[in-house]
Length: 253
Length: 379
Image (cartoon, each protein chain N blue to C red):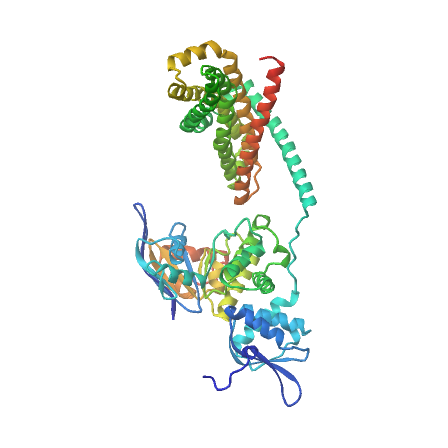
């Protein structure tokens, strides 16, 4: 079943054409990564997929709903079932971490305070945050902790689809790999579908089912990492060559 | 119609004893976030004990939140995570529960937020205000030093920034200052006129308006407008720059942010506020002239002749002389609040609000001080 369908997306900023017909589908219960050079329109595409930015042409369907044509109420219902982790966390600065995580639950579910606190505790533990972080304000957290708190908030409503915008950027490699493991577990155990925009080559090699490469406004490559690695595209070759260089070329070609 | 309606509590789980006498908790149905409250009460009513075994044969699905509640309930019953026994669970359900049990082993409670009592809050706020005032004095010293450096070597002055600020604080403020002071002139003439008319002392309205407007009203009103416009703008601009580490970038170039950012703003505001006050003087007298003819039968010619007779120039000068002092403190407070803002977006908003309040209070305090000084000096 395709939970997310992106069909022939075209995006222009003034004279500059960012997307010239981007299409792909995401099967339920998979972890799909979107990569591409800086300025290739990855984050723009993500914003179009979650219904924040209207594409100039093409359609985005999430959970079967056309995000740009369906009635407001239907889109809102879809939004309730997706979680988004923004690049810099986008935690609300006037709320503590616990309040940030509780906010979606408060808005959507009527739960007694005791259950609310139990759920906040679960999400913090899931995101790997100590309970002592609960009462801190986002400004009092380090970058990595902010990302975790933001993930805890994105998970709050047990989303069916999770959109992550560069989740491991700015994290140290150890924390970044732990983050990958955590996301992988969400996919394997809970069947959540995850779409991740990333630059992190280790995330691709370690955790991802499928990679989509965006370049020159189109999908350049689409498939399992091992296949995409050997595709004849200058950018893709250069991207994976960095890795081969570091590891002393044991990776073939 | 269901053949065998179960009690509501049994929909989610039931405690059963099997032949050997050991107790098993069989889980049933779809355990989802949407039914969390019901699942919670079912678990609490199940009467769990230490020796319970979990049976997942009837479980359709289980998500993290409901598994978490189950883990909580097991722990409350005194079952350690590693002692939990799972029978007949599907692989997926087993994984979810085991994951939750692993997460849980720290068993940390969320700390409660501390709320300060009224007295403690009062004390805390007092200390914060005192610290802030001390910081302002500190900043005053730094700014004075930076200005002294500029005076010693005028080439250090950043003319471009100065002119940009002059345009934003002075030129762009002209419409709002003109409109507000015109209306103030009309209102004051009208109120004085109502009283003066009763005694047939119409012409004395000119005396009152002339002195009142030039000496007090125009400087205060214009300073309050500028505090709201430019003081707030300074805090927001510098605060945003601080958030983006732009001020740190200036420092790492070996430049002084005081010199680059604060001095031009302070000087620009000190230059343009007196000019705006003069504009305010003119506009409010125009407003008074405007209403004086229809209401009090004072022709514009008579008004201006009377004004010329009674309004001594010292009143105007006193009003204009106060303006640079107001401007200095508005710019100082605005800049300092921006330069020291906390590193998050909320702090910029709070600091901007605080700047406006502080600036207006400072203007009123300064004006009161000036009133006493000028009275003693008989000016």
